[in-house]
Image (cartoon, rainbow, N blue to C red; front, side, top):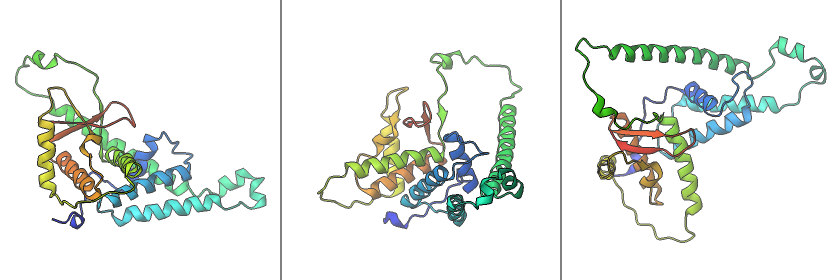
Length: 249
């Protein structure tokens, strides 16, 4: 089965504004004073990773990439001499090319926070039962701090690091043997690997990619996304930018 024929679209991608807001939160960027060079670079890296993994990149992501490049280029243009001595006039005329993007992100963040609040209320209501409380002490023997949730963007960030590492470690001369693996077969292999772990043991995300073959890397990553979608595996990380670990749910 040819891996290149796969075109996967995931519900976890909510749109380019969602990706931009994720980058702003992850890199602690001031939404009212966006450094366009840094934000544009990180956004394009994520788009590149999506394309490398044969994911279906919607046209709206590419439109946003063009918009970011346009804003970045406008900010690099020299200002008129009179504007350099009259910053108040510049703000009054709304000449900041980031203004429209900033307002869109602020509005999107409001709706996203409202949606998160409603989801929290739904989960809180789902914990209410009419039956008497049960003794769950046996499940609380090993209490520990809850790890951070891992989303699709964290996975893409980990893949960026992996692709760079594989490129640096690639030997100058090698003999490549092509072996195509269907995604469902790779999913079964991953489940088998995780089922062999000891209780409370986790597997490092990078340990699932021992091979240099790009097609094997892509299939493994897509298999992980499918297992995430089916809620078969648990992914967590201790801190931002730290390694991602996997275990069976």
